[in-house]
Image (cartoon, rainbow, N blue to C red; front, side, top):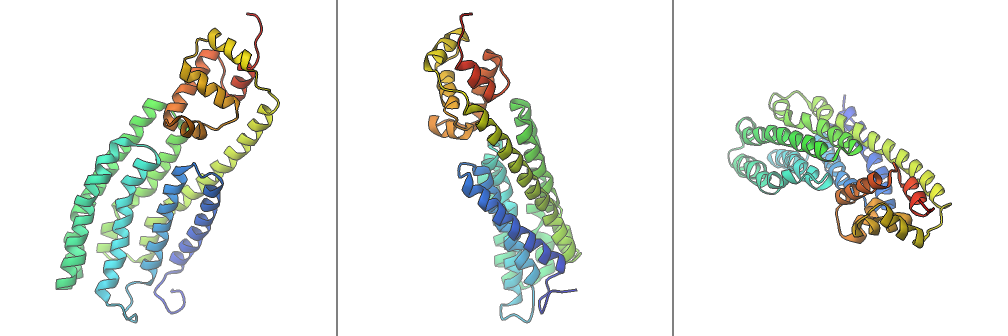
Length: 309
């Protein structure tokens, strides 16, 4: 079964439609929250997947004027670009600094270079696709498995250090979604077909898009409720100064308390103080422990209220 006069499978077409919807939704959410760079990096990934599905659904086709070998180079090139982007995505979107070397130096050497050597140069010269698939995938596939192992370790190490369960869930979901890509080479080599390729490469990311949308809606509702509560609490600078001494807050912690009382988000605080989101979270947790509160609303109320103790 194919779509119109192309070789595109209906499932591939469905994946394209879903990704277009996901890109639209994620773009709208990003424009509403421009400081959420994690969503921007995910948008880039969705766009790459969309391009891959379109190319994989249309190529190779002998009816096109584009030479077959060029079509194969294009499809494989997009696939290699996505695999190359994965470590960079985890490094930039989730701040997994342990992946920096793998993303910046390992990818060009073990993924980009084999693609250029076997597909762009080698395949263009000898035209033997079987040979190209057999040997061109060896180094990138081995490196993909290494990336999987090291990415998994980096995610776990970060979670043990920060105990951020929400971020951990997102990282694990993204990690599970990229696992099938490490096994894509055998699927292509043994010609299991476009349907299997589409399922391998898209199911996980469709699930992630749904998860992110669901979490965003929940966060928006929680933020709206929080803002409603905080609007009822006036800022009392004298009370904050007294409570600062009472709870032995550091200068940086007091600075963050003032910004929280001004209703700034953690992301906005990080940008204003030129520090990372993770550093803000650590300071806030220390403040919560000293002031003996569990939420921003409790903190604002307690810091703006002073009674002789």
